[in-house]
Picture (cartoon, rainbow, N blue to C red):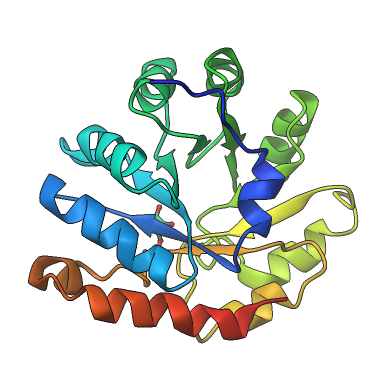
Length: 213
Ligand code: 3PG
């Protein structure tokens, strides 16, 4: 499947206030879940490579929901990057940063939103040309105060805080000049997915419109 139609990391971040972090255990859920998020105005979808079904879910969304832009999360290796691209991912998100993963994503033509939690990791990612980064795990690693501290030395970096972010605390993150969007799993609760409650997922996506910067 072609991966030529990719987005930059900044475009992925700017599309909506929230990038949903999605864990799929059943391929049958992938398409209706993606359609439910798109109906709520959220089309950049991070499907995490954490379940045996994840790649098949990415394939299904890429094939059947053209309005969505599906990406792979939890990309930790060259093999993950290759598999994500082969499945039709159009961007990648990693929980941490290594140069090997950065290069692998470039080699397969995927924009990467690399995860960082320390100044050293930010510097490594910047050395390799990445200036839009995921701050993970955001709440556990220092929350908004950490991003404020980083805005001095890393004035030229933009962040997508993810991990412990909710509809309630998202505004505090989004009010920071170095935050473009947030990531979170709250848009796709496991029980809503198990029950096929797609209307609830659409409503959770619609609720994020109030967060628009
Ligand atoms: C993750 O990779 O699990 C994400 O950071 C989601 O975190 P959350 O469930 O706290 O939103």
